[in-house]
Length: 165
Image 1 (tube, helix red, strand yellow):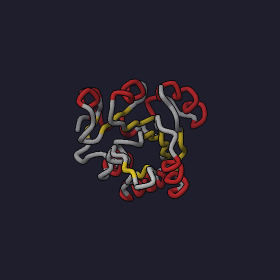
Image 2 (tube, helix red, strand yellow):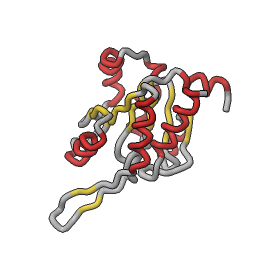
Image 3 (cartoon, one colour):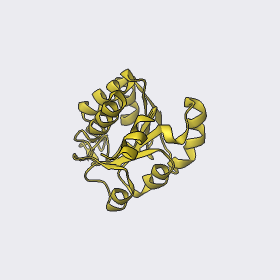
Image 4 (cartoon, one colour):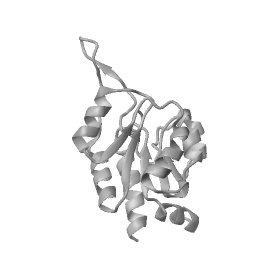
C-alpha cells in the first residue's frame, strides 16, 4: 500500500455507504404477497460497530425509500439513514456541517454510476468486487468480496487497521 493511500485512510472520521449492492447483493426478492425482501450480512454490521469503537460513525445513503432499510437501521442502532436521495453528492454540505468534518475525512463505498459524484467529493472511496466497471476505474480501493457478502466489513477492517497502526 502506498503512503498516499494510507494517509487518506488515516484521515477518515465518517463512513457513508450505499445500501443496495454494497450491504445487500443488489437483488430484490419478492414473496407470494408481492412484499420485497433483502438480505443483509451480519459481518457488515459488526464492521460498523468496530468503526464506532474507533470513533467513526456510519451513514446509510440510498436512492430507495424502503421500510426494510429503516428496520435494518433500527436493529443495528449505530447509523443514520439518508433515504430517497437521488443526487447523493448534494448531501455533502449538510453532512459536513452536521458531523463537523471536511470532505477528506469522509469515506464512501458504493457500487454503481449513481455513486460516482459523491465518490469524487470525498477523501477515500471503495467498491465491492462486483461494482460497476466505471466505478472500479475511479475508486481508491476495490474490495475482494462482493456486495452483500461482507464488502462493507472488508472496507471497515481496512480503515480500522490503518487508523490503529
